[in-house]
Length: 275
Image 1: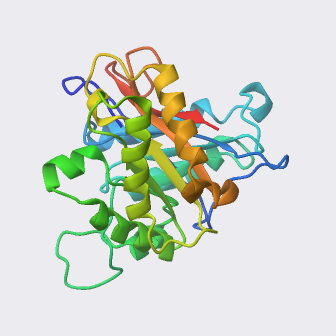
Image 2: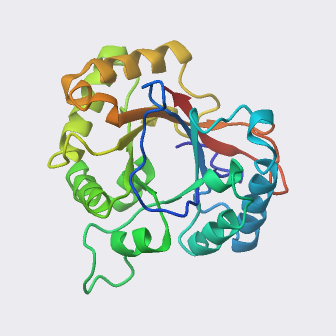
């Protein structure tokens, strides 16, 4: 997930009333589209709540006017840890049957163990208990700032899956000079490690963004991203999981792309759908 490092903006996601695993297929057997946003650490608590209320209001109109039918799209918001439960409460207050009521909430990270003497960490079991459905893991910022290895990310992925949630696993190559082929090879190596020990029947989201594009003026080119995603989908480690793997491009959008929801301008970072 990227964004202008000097401009405030969200990468957010979602609240849902159930922690049951997401069915990633629609009634026609195709993968359901997935789109969402994470606020990173851009927002205050009050702005996160205002942003969520604005999204809920927007998506509380009749479903057919928004072309977001129940069989088509999953929407998520990933706020900071402090506002998780308030965001869930706001979404649960949306009208029954509205698109807003279907928004799913994610967390920005978690620990690999459920309980223990891990001061300052967040339990995946507790996240599931309060209604979290997605957990974002392995973002390039965490690897750079907190020295997280792919092996460590894999331990967290198993903790998320163990508690019935869906891991949103951030992957991407460091350099552009290897082209699409080099990028596919690097991303495949990451996915092999992080999915070790995760059953083929488990729901998984791969959030792809080349690390070299994070913080840049523009995201990676469309053809480049499509080529990497195509190569990833053709790899047996993904094909063998059937329709249980969804891939999104976890990139940034400038002011006006998503709109100034929740007050203020700035940048909104979002996952663009790759069905």
